[in-house]
Amino acid sequence: MNIFGTTFNFEGRLAKIKKVMAANDLDCLIVHNWTNQYYLSGHYQHLPWYPVSHTHITESPLMIFKDHDPVFLCAFITLNAVREGTWIKDVRAIDQGFAPSAYEGIAKVLKERGLDAGKIGIEEKCCTASTQYNLAKALPNAELKFAGDLLYKARAVKEPEEIELIKQAIAISESAIQVAKDVAKPGVTEMEVQLAMEIEMKRLGAFREVETMCQSGVKTANYRAFAADWKKIEKDEPVTIDLGCLYKGYGCDIARTWVVGTPSAEHKKIANDLYATYEKFCTFTKPGMTFAEVFDYIRGQMIEMGYPATKTAFPCQQFAIHGVGLGPFHDFPHPTHRETIFEPGMIISFQPSVRQKTFTIRFEDNLLITDRGVELLSKTPRELI
Picture 1 (cartoon, rainbow, N blue to C red):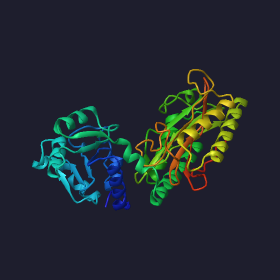
Picture 2 (tube, helix red, strand yellow):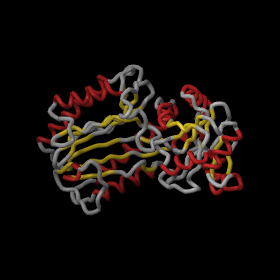
Picture 3 (cartoon, rainbow, N blue to C red):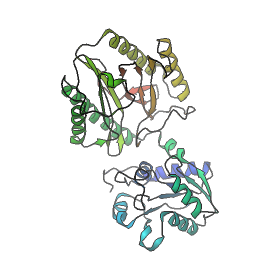
Picture 4 (cartoon, rainbow, N blue to C red):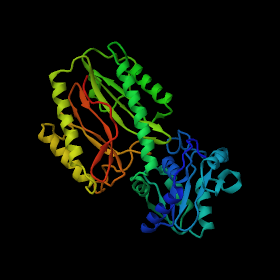
């Protein structure tokens, strides 16, 4: 059993991926991304992992075949953990006399299967340049094909068990948001607020997905910034938090802005426009629509409100729509795939925001695409006070 104790229909997932591989004329798919490895094999690698850490230990490729059983390659030092965490039977220690490197191990397995001249898919958005170079060198007769999006697309529609885990991650994050609101007082540093949030998430059995953000005052105008131990919250200034936690491998992404004290007229005006944008999004978005339709509609609505889409002058809009799930940061669907059709079972994040020179107001929620529209999963109020 894996470290999270999760059990999924791995047989069904593997069959789905094999069908995708057949449709894309792939004999083998080499999986390096640890979230995709978790999705297919059940084993979740201990972070930091490839490509964050690139060593002979952390480069442990999972090989998925169209017509054969999968093979998991790893270093001997992680062999027990991989075997413990996966349902896959063929787990091989590369450095136990099998091959001099992961690349040569891959070549050896492919030769065993008669596929050393086959069509091999790689995760080009994950693999480092050195990995791609070494794979090409080890597989001179194979055709390496970019196939990194195939797994993300296959993962986009969530299984009921996945939806429940994401809901639990949201509940944990929302508990951390309430803690942040209780802690954020004049004289308290941003770092103290961030720490309180992370302790709460850890207390409830989760860990952070990315650096938890807390910004206050003029620092909310920054696109991204770590919490500072020198910046203290002041009366009547906005505080923005952006957090996501991972619960049993599944994450969420939520942001809130509120004012510690009394919001200004400008704060209120922008917040009310963003509330209206939320309503338009929830009313408009339906399954069967493309990402482009929804994205362009919301962009147009915010332009009509007086917030241009340009990022070179203030005020301007800065909204985001992206998938939520395994991550490791954002999941599919993604803005780079505007042709994506929204389907029931997808979970997305929607974040409208308005950036000014000295502050930003933004809110972010997670929503489930249903047969009829969208269901709001995050419930924390968006009020400025």
